[in-house]
Image 1 (tube, rainbow, N blue to C red):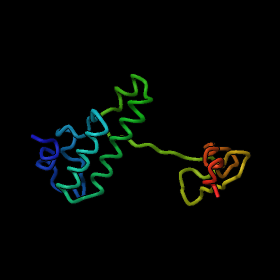
Image 2 (cartoon, rainbow, N blue to C red):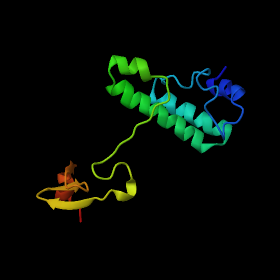
Image 3 (cartoon, rainbow, N blue to C red):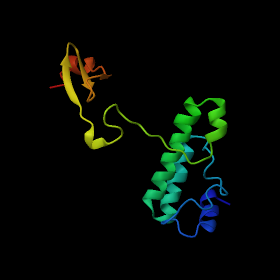
Image 4 (tube, rainbow, N blue to C red):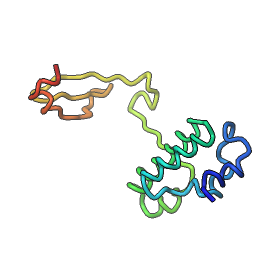
Length: 136
């Protein structure tokens, strides 16, 4: 049976609580590829009509595949892969509150630089844009 169909058979109300049955259906196990993530996410949205369910599930898969599989130690992978996980990113002085983040652009010789609220560089060289006149 398809994992989405298996999950739907065990989940009484996906709109209120989509988690029941996901582990049993294999939907919490890491997907084998980004293509598989996209395919299952599309099937979740198509069969439930709930974009949020597909988005949250896909985001969870991306956290597992990118952060845990890509950067985790063996112990972290054993402890976290296949479980619900999230990533939180914060900045000094403002935490993770997006309304408190500020940025500014500063023109540099042959490059532009994005600077975070504290004045530290988050560098992204754009020299080729400058040479081609794309930064005007």
